[in-house]
Length: 157
Length: 89
Length: 119
Image 1 (cartoon, one colour):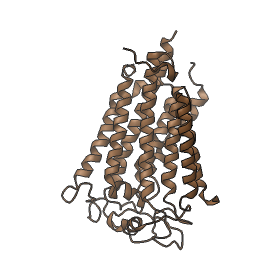
Image 2 (image 1 turned 30 degrees about the horizontal axis):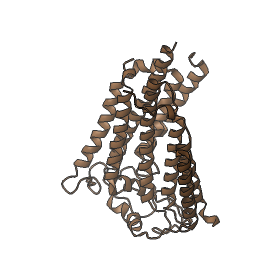
Image 3 (image 1 turned 135 degrees about the horizontal axis):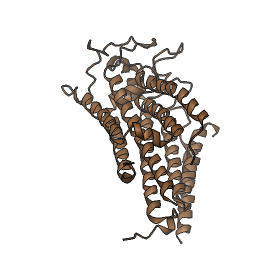
Image 4 (image 1 turned 90 degrees about the vertical axis):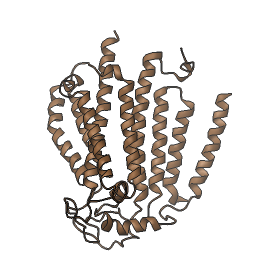
């Protein structure tokens, strides 16, 4: 299959930063607006897959290897588990940052309020680790499937 | 013979489904809401987040999210294991 | 009866998915049927938690005049549906990878010809 034309490559590299910023916004503001780790991770993975579709899998495979994605996904999973284990003095999964004056520890006033980023306890950190896990996992699956497609048509003659 | 049994089972099951869909409670009136009322009223005090759904997913029901993260990790590991000989291009 | 339309849509989706699983012979069509069935179940789970004329249970910039427990929808079914959607995506990825491997070995995607386990 001939490689994609110049128009596709140009438009994809223009649109790609906006999609990444939008997805990261959904992940980080998960405790104030609708969204969270899983939803923002799916949007960001779609942005990276757009780059893979526009440039072909041969060029993307030179930059990113499989082992980097495995390391990223394991880092996300391990940080999720360690955040759950850090509150073990009271209970497993205890929210030990809400109410204390550490980084995310303010309690918002009751009722309708414009959202403050400083609230939330351990929730924004969990959102970030789950988002990292989902991005790495979905991108690894699509990368493997593109390798299968490329090898299949090179060998079938 | 297999096709006839499958057809009879499918028709019986679809009759049960349609009759259940028509006689369920009216849409928009849930029956008992004590747990959800408690969660809506006390989510800002106890977790400190404005979003009640995120506080349910990560704080009140964190075990389910742990199980879901495990399923996602296992599925990605399984895909990379089944298609292993295309990964070394 | 006209006010139960989401439940009728759920019944239609489950019947379409079950028909595709039982009566089709291509492997990809069976996988698509499983996905439609799982979409129907997710829709049923999320329409169980609705209250009439209510807003989402989020406190950032609430519209004026919503009463706090009775004017919001229930948050627990929404959390369960999130988990179910992610599990559906993971299972779909694994099913497609295994069907690629089946095609490589048997050279066909017809379910009736794959029945015998070769040695």
